[in-house]
Figure (cartoon, rainbow, N blue to C red):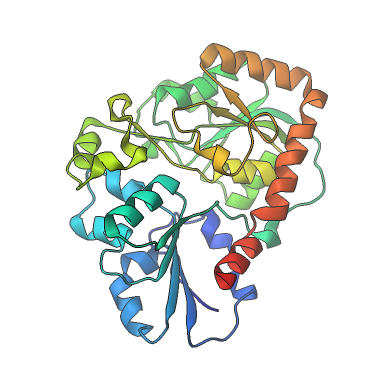
Length: 320
């Protein structure tokens, strides 16, 4: 299977930019993996260029973002849904959108899958834990503020692109920043030295975004959009996989979907928290009794190492 990469539309140092699928590719005139959001955004051009290939495969990294973004154009939405049929198989991080699109299009082309971790970047040796908690990302919701304030009595890190990137402008959160716009490998190094990685697998919606979703045909048939009254939709983030393979315990907010359970088992590979009080108590418990939780970290590491690397993903799509 041949590989073409086009990372336009990705962050400057996104995890996808560390993927080395070229290490696994083989010459082929029938099978091609068009990898990267740029391949989806320019799908017509790539489909024309590789029209003779009978198995054009891609990976949609953004779903369900295109469907909930009030600024998405019809072209962006149609590209995400591949309404022109430019690809024969589309792997996606959103299992709900995969089922929805397969049903409304009347054919099975969308396949849910995990977020791969670059096999060549796995650090197998255990690191000493210097930090208690870590959150990396922006401030989109009170849940993210809770990560910072719940851990402020512990040795914690907050890594972010910067205040200008926060949809929820909370100047008081600036004081928690310990790293800004760090290279991804530096973040992974910090994760390896951290007991707990905090996260949610939710996208937080504005009223305009809720309205945009309700303009979509058959939107109510997508389980992803079943809780619009709460102004949230599920999205499997890269953070759980990155925490798991770097031996940091995943402490994640329980939500109506719990999409993480498609790939990891609660209590075995990660731990839920329910609210801020529960979050504070679990941070305290895990941090002070770390030895009681290391088996969960090892389970998540082993599951990721044995199933969810870029090599596993490429072997799956090549064999499929």
